[in-house]
Image 1: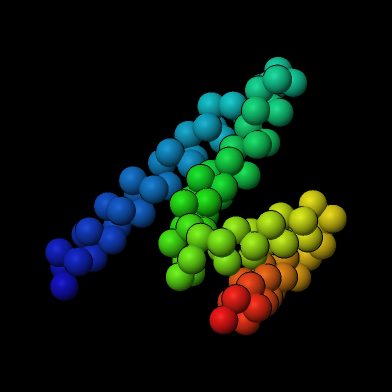
Image 2: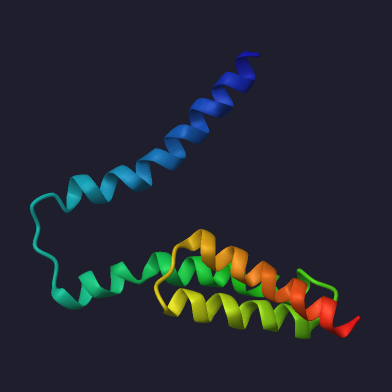
Length: 101
């Protein structure tokens, strides 16, 4: 039990320190506009890199996955809620599978 507690505390420290250091070191510093813009796009790029490969392996056929992706991207481009985008993608895959079979 003590080893498990030490592992959890160690993991918490290893995760917390890289998040805390930039806040401490950059407190009150003015960042250049280019760097601010660059840092603003990191979450979108990370999520895209994690999700995009799974699109092609999530269904039985690539065509149905692409139909759901197309609908989800279209709904997201229109600025709709994330829940609507997800359900739209699922509906696109479902309709593709129903129409093909």
